Each structure stands twice: as structure tokens, then as C-alpha cells.
Image 1 (cartoon, helix red, strand yellow):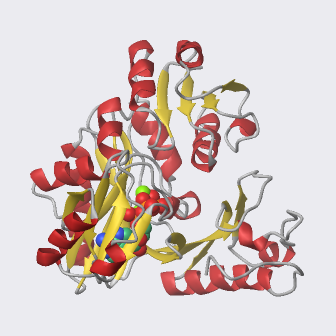
Image 2 (tube, protein in one colour):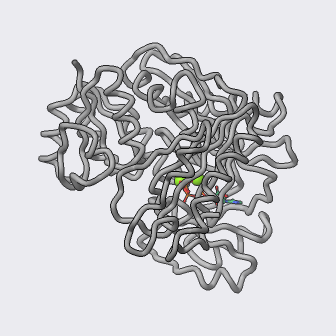
Length: 384
Ligand code: ATP
Ligand code: MG
Ligand code: MG
């Protein structure tokens, strides 16, 4: 059978590999350590730095098609992979999606709604931006942030002086959007141009980290339709092959703005494993392999996913007792095989299905909530 190369060894790569293998593919993982979540589930692992040209070429020579699970991979590595075999998303997509400034400019130029932003390099630049955008302002590093890392919410000019300006990094200022809710759309575009979207997922964050996602969202049918149209145009604008998650803010229950995109499966789409005929991971396999895309409709009334952060593990690194979770009807447990639990680290997730989203959400939160109290030594002050 054909071999799919996966650059990156995290949980997204692991769930992708499991989907690909059940479709008959072999998967080779390029990662920095054999203990990474994706490396544990495949036979073929290439260990090395992602910018080590010799490891990258050796890996690429074993693959028929290459993809990735994380956008903060050197674009040069992906360009090099593309010289030996088809590589999706391309290094051009990656270069766009790994820089918030280029990403927002690209979508704004295409007429898509994005949060008002400006490139900034100093306190004075932020103050000038706030003259038109108003306070608060969110300042982010343009590159390599995730889970809210590298972000500062500034209420006024005096706080802008406290940003640790680092002239070697590029920075972006964004207007603070007082959104009603956050949704995301995972869209797949195949090598032959077929496009399909999962229905929007609604997302609750806690401490800037995704906490809970559910589906169907509370969007009206009309706004949900607009969200799918934006995601589709975003994928076409960057000429994506693979899957793309488009994170959106919902304002006044009717206006949508793109927050950011990720050219890969997304944490908010994990519930598709149980809730849809085709999971986002299988869809990614289909898209990069040029296969027909799968059915994205919900096959249940509602589904919800809750992240399991390292905060639930005790100080010795012991996992919680899963008995209660396993006893809860329709709740599925997914663990990523990470041994070093740390507060804020994504260790796994739970998914529940039910007659509607609200019931599914209640069920998954009850199952997770029951994990917390009885375990001694657990730190429970984040991730909720
Ligand atoms: P990840 O890649 O893990 O989703 P990230 O570090 O790339 O996170 P963002 O998605 O840009 O960060 O921001 C994280 C969260 O912070 C958003 O989902 C939203 O809740 C909040 N946030 C970010 N930018 C803004 C903004 N301009 N206005 C209001 N809230 C914001
Ligand atoms: Mg991000
Ligand atoms: Mg985000």
C-alpha cells in the first residue's frame, strides 16, 4: 500500500495516522522524539530536527504523499518535501497560515471579513492603532503562537508600555472583538478541487485554551450558511489541498469575522470521530490522497467534546480514574499517550453524543466534572 508521510508527532498526527491506517495506508512520522503521540502508533518513525535537511530527505524518499499536523513547521522543510513527492498543504499555504499578518492581509485582500488589525513594532504604533480601533487592543506575536501564548490584552496606553517588545519578532495588533460566541468551520478541499464543510462547531475557551466544542452550534441557519461560505472561500483563496479550520467570531448574532485559520484538523473538530460518517482525520486522508470526500453531516442530534488537560493528572503524573467516564452512556475517552502531564497541556478529550447539543454538552461536562473532586493532589484551577 501507499505510504503517507506525516510531519509532526502530536495528537493531531496520531489521530490522522489511526484514520489513515484503518483505510489501508502506511504512515511514516517525522518528529523530534519516538515518544511523541503519533510516533507511538506507527511502525515507521524518522527522528530528527524538522530543519535537518538529511532527515527530511530520507523521510520524504519513503513517502508517496506528505502532509502535516502543525502549521509552525519551517516552510522550507515542506518545500523540500514537495520536491520528492506531492505535499499538502503546500509550503505557500504554510507560509501564509504561519504568519498572522500575511494571513489576515491575504483574506482581507480577497474581500473576506477579518478582525481589524495592523502590524506594530512599538508602544507608539499600538497607541496609533487604538486611535482608530479603540481600546482594548490585543497584541500578538505574528508567528508561532498557540493556545493564546504570546498574546497581550491591553486596556490602555500605559499597558502597551508593558509589552515585552522584541525587535527580532513581528507583532500584530488586533481590535478586541466583544463577540457573542466563537465558532469554527472545518472545510476539506481535495487534490481535484472537491470541497466539503463540516457543520459549524461552537467553541468555549478557558484561559485562552479551547475547553468545550459542540455541534450543532446555536447559529441561525442563515448565519451558519454564511460561515460555511466564508470557510469555502478561505480555502479557495489560499488554494488549499487538505483540511482547513477557520475560526470565526460571531458579533451581534449575525456578523462573522475570521480570527485565524489552521491548515489541518483542529481540536474543535474532534467530535466528528463519533458524530459524523467521516471524521475530520479521515477527511484529511481523503483530501490529500485525491480520494472522493466523505459525508460530513451529523449522524446524531448533537455532540460535544471536552478537553482533558494535564491539570486533571496528579503531581506524580498519574491519570485520573476513568471508571465513571467509562460508565457514562455515549461518552468516549481519547487519550494521546503523553507521559508528562503539565497544567494546560492537552492530554486527551471526551466526546458525548445525545439528542441535541445542549444535552451532549451537559453529559460531557458531567463526565469530566466527576473526574475532579475525588482525586487528591489535583490542581483544578485552570482549564474550566
Ligand atoms: P490557537 O491556535 O490555540 O487557537 P492562538 O494562540 O493562535 O490559539 P487565537 O486563536 O488568535 O490564538 O486567540 C485565542 C483566543 O483568544 C481566541 O479564540 C479568542 O477567544 C481570544 N481572542 C483572540 N483574539 C481576539 C480578539 N481580537 N478579540 C477578542 N478575543 C480574541
Ligand atoms: Mg492559532
Ligand atoms: Mg485560535
